[in-house]
Image (tube, rainbow, N blue to C red; front, side, top):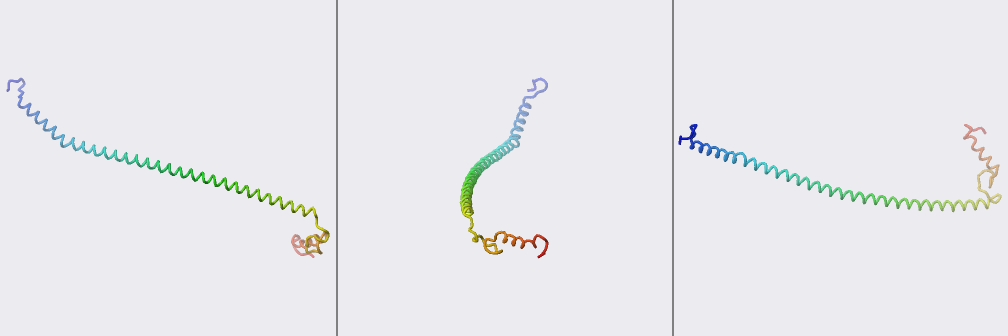
Length: 152
């Protein structure tokens, strides 16, 4: 077997090929398989995290839509109640205005009829109806208040 040039021995070449094959097999089982298993678990873990995040995001969107719908319903209810309150206030104002007009008309009718002499309101100064004498007496009673003291 030593007929090959450069002192190459076939048996040595086969032994080196066998050693290289054993080295590759050992590296495959010692490094490649554990790394492959680790990477598979890692990929599955991150895919599971992504799936959970997607589910939670969808749940959050669903809850948000639910709350937005409730908020829209509440805003509609507030708007409706506001309109009802405004209508009720307008009706109440209209009734009060009508009552005030009726009372004003009644007062005007009484004023136009006028009081009869001696039947006016009692002011407490000089008899019924008072007249100018009653008003003067009333104003003289106020003088101490405005003049800074009592000056008879």
